Length: 85
Image (cartoon, rainbow, N blue to C red):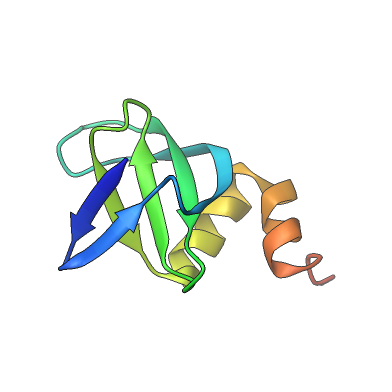
């Protein structure tokens, strides 16, 4: 699927699927929906809703927070092991 957001092209066929376990509240919905989180080779992040009809670009810090909330295993794979408190 190809999305153009802020004049940048995101092609999910060329991006790495980081997690399909995340949930996100898209601007047109009133509740959390299942979504997929992708990362490009240029380290751009994209969340695509479960129907692959809407997407939103996010920054890396937001991606980290989402992964920590919904998929810790994917977080550890992407960013190394969690720091011990």
